[in-house]
Image (cartoon, rainbow, N blue to C red; front, side, top):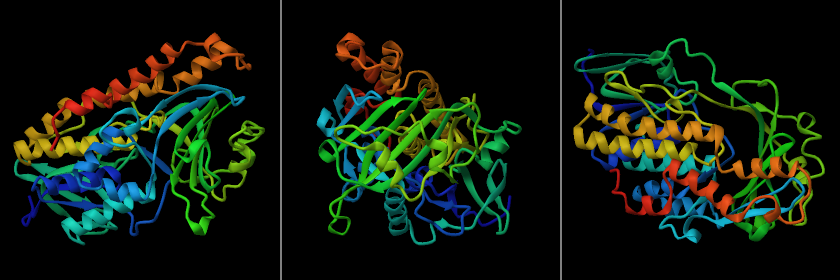
Amino acid sequence: MSPGANDDVLIVGGGVGGLALALSLHQAGISCRVFEAVPEILPLGVGINLLPHAMRELSELGLQDELAARAIETRELAFYSRHGQFIYKEPRGRFAGYDWPQLSIHRADLHDVLLTAVKQRLGKDAVQLGHRCIQVDQDASGVTLHFDKTQPRTGKLVVGCDGIHSALRRQLVPGEGLPKYSGVNMWRGTVRWPAFLGGDTMVSTGWMTVGKTVIYPVRPGTPETAGRPLINWVAEIERPEAVRQDWTGRGRLADMMPAFSGLKFDWLDITAMIESTEEILEYPMVDRDPLPRWSLGRLTLLGDAAHPMYPRGSNGAGQAIIDARFLAGQIRKLGATEAALAAYETVRNPATAKVVLTNRTDPPDTILREVWQRSGGKRFARIEDVISAGELEAISERYKKVAGFDRETLKTRPSFV
């Protein structure tokens, strides 16, 4: 092992999970450094929802006020049919009695808050850009990270936070192949648009057979935007094969229509909103099968590198943040050791595997599937004639328990760190 190791934990990937881990390790008094492949941080992505279980962790890091200033605090989640008929709604976050809010925020804003905090607390050199990891070596004393263009770095542990196409996962699971396509293609975008349903509602409509949408505001309106908030929208439709296996492809309106034409409700013209969006991203809904193990000796995985999941429960970023906090807690308790990684995986692997599999079969938008199938996609006189309120509530509550944010469990469990 090369000499000069000066960080307990080497973090591969400077996304949400990697930065949350760096902040959590710093809070726990553990030295670390982040190595990010890109040479420059750009404001990428679209909207993210931070559910109360994620916000509890970010609040313990002292970031709630900064995030809230750049986000929309979500008041309720509402479901509507493709014809604009009301199906079900429920309060969210503090409006549902949680001690923490649900925030809808642009990914770039979330990342900026995390990155700024890392630089302020850990130092401006805590995140090393232009470091593309190609291999990890380890022995009884530590790990060595090898990069494509820069000198190796050594430490006691390495954590792969490098996303769904993780280089560290490929080393752990060689020959795994591409992520698994769900049969659903997605388009996403953000656009300044008039507020709807009180300005703090997250809406889900339709169903993927003919076109499903998820729509919510992620930035407040300003005088410069004539008071119009920034609206994040997702459009999904079943498609036989994936167009691409990346998250940065540019989408075309022609490929989405006519599935999303004619969607004009009393409170929102969805079609006009989509057509007014300057930049549309297109990518497949994909995940990977749960792994029997994430760790090998002094190496482990976190977030999308460990458990990429369908974005059907507003849970991907949240689970990565929880991974980071729980792992930091185990390293604080057991030191930068293989035992800490084993303790982390013992709890987080089965917990996230349940979320991955539930997102395939029984996520919150099962509500839309049930209504679509039972109504035959037709207009209904009363939702009660299609499905009971109790059954709709049960679908929602089931998912909260699986994902770890049912109210009482979240309120009573001890802090991870």
